[in-house]
Length: 341
Ligand code: 1CP
Image 1: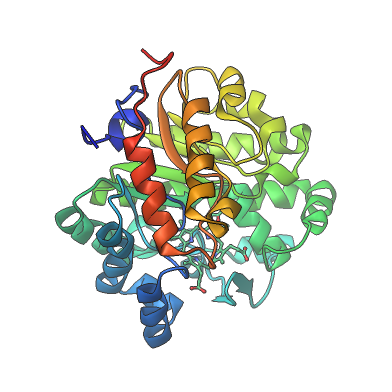
Image 2: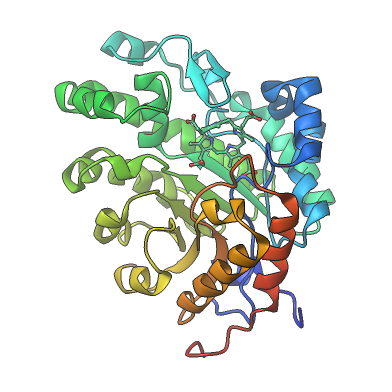
């Protein structure tokens, strides 16, 4: 690596000499040191204890020369203070789904200070301990609503789409509360020192354009708008290229793209935005050679504008950490010169 790749420069839309790289779910089950800590403490305790959250956040940073750290937490973290009981198995499972108007009316909208004080503490500690910029994050309102209404994230979401169509007023009341909580939660992270934020709208892609325009876009817009003038804002929606015309209107600096289409095609539909992505996480389950060849293709397709290298979605549990090490080096060794200046 000749010059350090700059995550924040790329996030602000500048072309960098090398693509900065971080990986969604870079802390997690593919790392033995993560599994060991989780065995001892359990997931929620790791999230809620600042020293443990800091330790897990830094585990991948110590192992690999990554260009950004992402706070170890979960998109569900702000929900228990609203009165929602959630367990992990390993994905989130709710004790009782939220379905009726009175379920929604019962949800609390806690003050920023009450929402997740341990997250603000973890962010402050990380700012003094992390050698690289820190990304804060939250779930987008529609994606949080997916878990609240269905009780889990793992079905085809037809139940959710049916519920939205049947109960639009209740849905808007729920999305409105989630939007307010998400704004408070992200502002807390930025005030504590997060240097960028990513809004995870992981399940937005299961909706058609009209459904997204009605139940997804306006709420994601409000959340991102509330952070205007602070830090770069990254928006992620998986399986959502049918929505790019709408996503292009969001007040964000960066869009995180899944693995389904080459970045050069996405750029045309997301003009003026930095792109993040988009190696297929499945390739990291093959060999280091195939993963590196895939990364080179992504890097070539990412020329022509600002690019933050990442996977199209999270690192999978069976991934070999040595393959991740090879991947990160390959990204740093790739010069961004052709067609880019
Ligand atoms: O078994 C375990 O160890 C728990 C696995 C796990 C981990 C490591 C969960 C449960 N959450 C996390 C951490 C996490 N979740 C991070 C940490 C930072 C990082 O290293 O990237 C982040 C950013 C998240 C965000 C998250 N949680 C999202 C958005 C990202 C995405 O994947 O689209 C979603 C949808 C969740 C829900 C969730 N929590 C956990 C799982 C396994 C899932 C997704 C699958 C499901 O819905 O069942």
